[in-house]
View 1 (cartoon, rainbow, N blue to C red):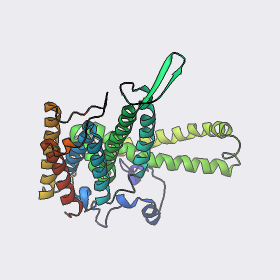
View 2 (cartoon, rainbow, N blue to C red):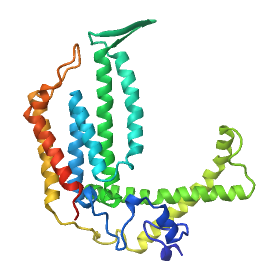
View 3 (tube, helix red, strand yellow):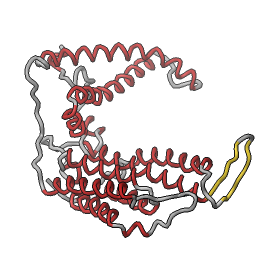
View 4 (tube, one colour):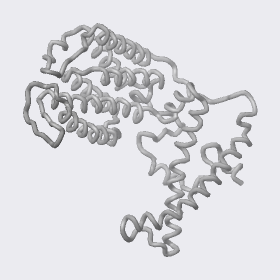
Length: 327
């Protein structure tokens, strides 16, 4: 029965209407009538080119330490998200980056003792806590760098189609790509199974939503057994469906949606290579160095350095070219 109605990614899926599925599908991941992927911005570019650009952007945000330059890269990352129409979808990642960044911004100044401009000092038992202006600046810049890196990877996650992301991974390791593909497909199904089992228990009079948090956890533990049994049955169905379709019995075959190389793809790859080279040049020569301790360096002269101008140009120009481009 499962062999007829299911495939490697859809075995024993719950019955749902097409209208309901479409209503619950995120707008950024909906496909057109012919199943074509989105056709604007990074989503319309070749995945390898988009990955190269995002990698260069994240590398620059991770390597740069000058406060002004970090702020510019953070603003650039937010601007690229906005140009690709993915700013709202990146908000959950921004919240995580903000929470971790605030923790670092508060923690670093308490343990950074190298600054000369002491703002506050106190003895807590054997520990001496010294709050300096340099330590505060270092903590804030560290938080901004983390936010820029997180948003850069969020750009890759929300802008590229999941199939394209898994396709990149499968090119490196086919088995890992297959496992992640199945997991990404079956995890929502598992979540729906858990909701249906919980509804069935409520219909039988089990109080799942009353009492203290400890009581709610205790009454939900028996549901794990039913959920585990259902997931194992689904795994057997998926394996049987794959075997019935001859998976692993012959030479590997696959269908790939090939996008032709265009000028914008070449611009992304060239910009990524140029940005990485400029950043490496700044690091190797020491031109990108910036000291917070014992006194803050002047951040403005570095804005006129050749490596920085080259880096910024290599990141901005492809982003502008790609943002409004169609395939």
